Length: 401
Image (cartoon, rainbow, N blue to C red):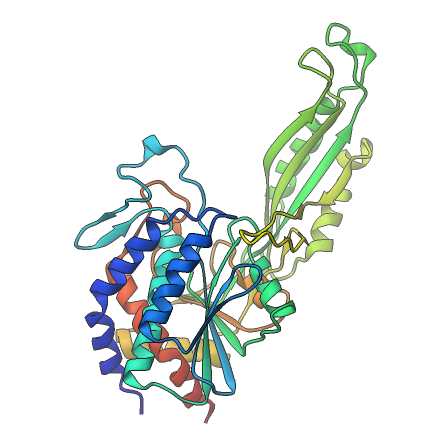
């Protein structure tokens, strides 16, 4: 029998250590491509609390293991952060952060270093309470998620050769259990024109003007998206626009827009691309439609190029991994969890979206805090999540009997 009361007491006992550790890793700036110092600090903490094996792979992902059983269960959190944005919008330093009786603030406190702190100390609880069984717990602290969600797990699965039975994603979940997310792809549209001197624009062919009706068509397309009844409506928005010309005194000979296209469970990459290619406004000017590609190196210098498409995923509420997380939640928090999809995208887009490995989301903090000024997470969430993480492996194994 699992002693859930003992797990809860241990999580509360380690609350000061979790808060301290979280504030320390918030204070380490870890933009994409700069995660090295943060990875090393988390590695040190994993070793301190008693993980059986701690390694860093060639991409720079941190892999911490507890146990040696046949059931490989993964828990994942990314340590990279987005930029601070306009610092005048912050009421405290995003790296020094803040702390009061209820909250800890700072860039990455919710998205998603809070989840990392919980996973590490869940490992300590597992070791101290002897919550071992025929499983191996793999805690991954991953890189480059903000720039290219899932790329880290493409590498872990394809190159490290690691394939867990399921993964728990520690992204902020608003106190809910998350069982899916919309997918997304990054689409480009380019129009070509002919340059000429800006004083004689009629002698050229302005690529920006050719793009104008396409922009209106994208707005129209968004309004006509359909609902799949599971993940909701797909969406599309123009996120960037840029043009090219010989000078500011010349007609633009090229214009490109970038689209953020969100996909529900009935839409895939080819469907979304064909939607764009089929727009009359795109056909009329023979615009080029393409997928953007990610080729930036990790902090180790490794490049692992990929097209920027990120499939949706949904796990059934009665699937064993989801049932195990929900049961641990009930036993530790004494309430029934809400189970619903995330609004945003996570590493699950690779783990389950590409490779079919089941994912369940549960993490401290609220989605609305992610990428926002004055980002913060709640101390109660940290303790709740730490306890649930510690209980998940044995809860899962008991349900397999």
